[in-house]
Length: 417
Ligand code: FHN
Image (tube, rainbow, N blue to C red; front, side, top):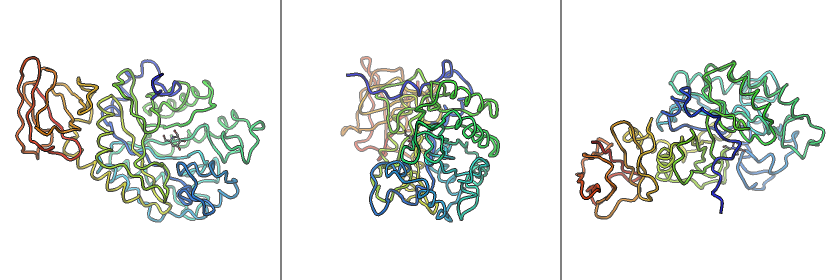
């Protein structure tokens, strides 16, 4: 059976980019916050009283909502609880170093003030404020990098955008005109009006041609040369590879820089019916697993239509942050470690130290590993006082710790010479 394609071929990394120092901050960061937010947070998964299956931000397509009807949502969009500072503080508390915000998703509604269409947060809603402006200012103040999601191919609102087969006749659409007269000017806007943008996070490349992908890349480079472009620009042109949603490769992937975008429950855009929240332990393990294999974790929140962040997301991010506060040394800037393929533990490393992240604590508190040349073992979390010893015997390292895992999520041991 062929291995699962964790990276679709068109979601690759341009040759040589894995040596590019422009990605150094991102390689250091490891953990980011994705934000999916738009007018789809009003129906929140329910249309005409019917629960529409699937991810919340796809409701327009899944329920084939006519544009004229869907547009009415904007008239009710008044997110008075939106607080950019609170969102950025939450990201910081979680230990996330960058934010990626949906400037325009597939439904075509723009969450920033654009001159290309009145269908945007400033001109089409009672709220009337530029949500992105406030977010960019809060990010700048708090030293968090800001990336922008932009749907460059699917646009179910624009007459020449891809994907709306219920309002438009595909054979009459002119996708090239859409790219030239709408996408490029919008990409120029988001890169000109909101200060330094760290990433443009393109998505679902579908029908975009190699020339169109290249020209978008050139535009980003021209306007903000330091700005990264994710692997979903299409045609293998991104600065880093983007894994499939929620997918963690089974093995080390050291040959490319990569990122897994992921949900905390099962949707990106807010849905009232989705209560399938992953546990904090699972989320921390996902982060560790990803970093141990060479990737970054971009974990999503979906604010509701008032702009409030769902409480279960807040709780989990805060708990992740507590773990990161104590154990972040083994995550930020860490490379994949020498021990790979073990079920009970993951490893990362930096010069002079190997970090063992223990997922399954043994009942005896004893762990046997291949001798990787370490002479001392210590807890990364300085508040831990449980005894820990290391012995080298017959080409093996024998670690002896307490009988109970000292951390309920993942306990981290530092091995040094
Ligand atoms: O279709 C989108 C989806 O709505 C969401 O934005 C995710 C995030 O990675 N990307 C696409 C599906 O892969």
